[in-house]
Image (cartoon, rainbow, N blue to C red; front, side, top):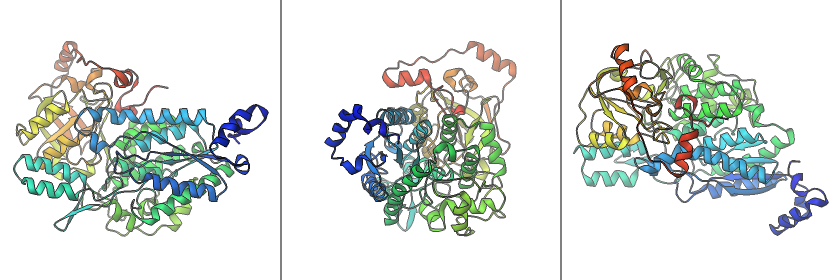
Length: 551
């Protein structure tokens, strides 16, 4: 066992002394040591209950003959960090989480790992560490939040952000805003729609690193605790069989995850994270592969924020196994590959048929192509990403004058101040991985547009990124970013911009000669950086590469 580095031989007598100080018995010294990596936190509604999940995991480990050792990671709540300096640290935290887990699992060489994430960057951060360490591992998330309800209508956090725009434009009063505020988030769990947290927990299941139900069983269900206990016992089977993440997260497994992503209409952030995880695992996955998957995968689900259907509804009709089963009817799923519990085929055999409403049949999808599209053009020669499944039909093709802002705050002030007009294209730049730094989410300005009634007449493009709660013609991850001299930096106020999602194109309608002239005259924007953000900006790559650090 790997843990023998701590406990075998006479030279390890001091180490055993320290273990005995923890209450480890003579019998336990002979058993496998299993790390439980928990992201429990009083800061994050999605993580408030994870200590209880951790106790269930540890019970499962003990029942199966292992000895659990739990430690915690940091976590950022993207909702609480939104629209202020804190959001610069959200994506940055992904790498810190991965690095800190590497430190802990190398300094304390245990035999296997159970990862307990739930929210946005914690899931991919743990996935990166999982790939890097390549120990027998399994994931169990905390589960999604139940949707809110007000006046008989269910809603989620996306509508809450949109309500801010509605209040600013006089569409609702302060009493209504307060009533919505008190109803949007009824309890613990990851936010209730197909936002980034639920997207990544569903995709962790689809890639095979979590048990069936990981992405969809609600946080408050007893079934979630039973799943956690089962994950604890199942990691012991993985250890027994020496089944490692590299055996599971193969190219075919990533293909299954991408198919699921497109069928579900996941957050655009999932593109960023899957690219980074594949890079860490040594699997080739680039933006062109993602685009090909999008073009050939039907969108079978339309979940909040694109509709009033929530993750809890998806769970009721079979969750991720049912989605994969329906995709397999079109030959789009690799079935004879391993997961943390049996093969993909085993999961599909146990899954119900698609209900035809929440999970559409492949003959009657919401879209013939996937919920996410990759755009290219002279603004984004390395690509940009849009959640096309949440775009109004009339905005699939839009041409209008550029309204240029060099920060999220500037754009938000203009939108809430009534300075954006129907037909405009809002351009937010210098918010990329390097330029932000940190590639902030733009949920506040996109929601403000919706709340102001501009969702069907205004497009927004940025080298930053979006929350999974974003809907509308919002194009993010524009690469190269402005700080690297990307063409988005060269757009001027009033320029004509074409956003053609239908044909996957994003272009500035000026001549090549004018573009080159502007490129020669461009000067980088200087920002005074300190601390971790300074180090991050010096190391991070572009959004098209997953905003990873170079190995």
